[in-house]
Image (cartoon, rainbow, N blue to C red; front, top):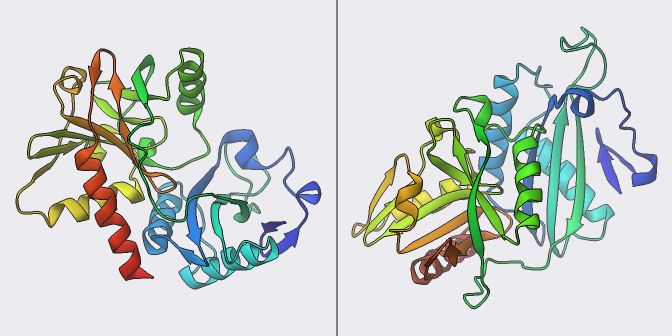
Length: 284
């Protein structure tokens, strides 16, 4: 069952049409959520990122789009799909409805829809023995700016990059901005570990304002023995690192095992995952 503007409908009866602005122009935003036993991980961060993104997109935010309302709709959808007591992946999509060309019709209204699916792992784990190989994706570059940091339906670079990765037997690719700095992976933020120094690209470089990125930065900031910096990362630094790892809400932390001729460990990433799970237990 899909939740369309608060109404539960079968997927075959979805009310999304070819005139939907999210379909026609990418005039839509989404949040990917992880829910375990009815608990939405980091829901407040997801909600405020969505609201900030809607303001950047100049969407008229409906008065009923409160954090409590949308949470209740997510839980209602989980219940209808018998996933309220399980681990699930949620996509909360917001679009500007139908009507208009590039300029929305005056009568266009913001819609939301919620799609849920089962997810295997309730907490975050790392399989240190499983290889995870990446390379740079250099066919297209991300231009830094407010729009590059939005989780919008315009993900052409990520789609083409994912096809490229599959064709070349990579597990993922790292994305460059127009200044040729490494900003993120195709599906998450990037962290670089070198001794006691931890780097992650700044939002100003064009990376996604990731919810898991924020959690990891908060965890690292509490360790006085680490020097954590949000700064640009050049491709030349990658092979000098001790560890590289990718973060997103669904998988948590994914250590990179190989980039070109360099192999990496995952000891630091393992420690961060332990602290992340401990934080989640305190929140539940």
